[in-house]
Image 1: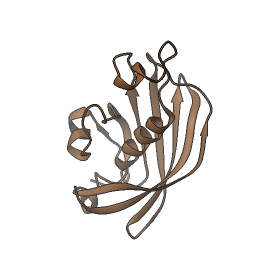
Image 2: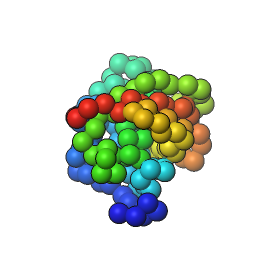
Image 3: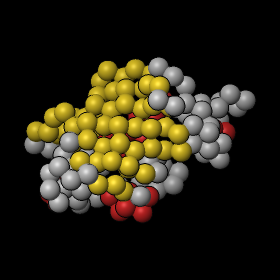
Image 4: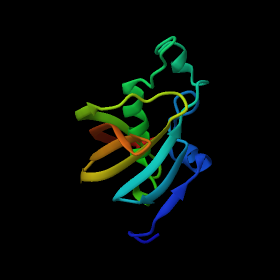
Length: 150
């Protein structure tokens, strides 16, 4: 795989890259990825998601912490395709500059993009954004610790 090759990952590929499973796997597809640089992907949200039952009854909203988790999972796609990271576990090391700008609801497609902005030793930092219908819903700088094997 060349450094500039654009790749895509379906749900089966994503399940091979991440240890998460239902109900905590929050990425349905990675539509565009240049390993070591950036990823774009999405999560389709339906009223069947367990968290909508309690957040909030009569006014369902995709919880902000799960928006961040979805973006973090998708961000792992920036590094996991690279041979040196394929069997690694990525853990949160920090979150900075979080801004929630729009509610995300059942029926929305939560589009995400993440750009790797720093990689030093076992720490990576990405700037991630989430969109609904082309409008910015959330953005944050996400830091990861690259741990041992998954």
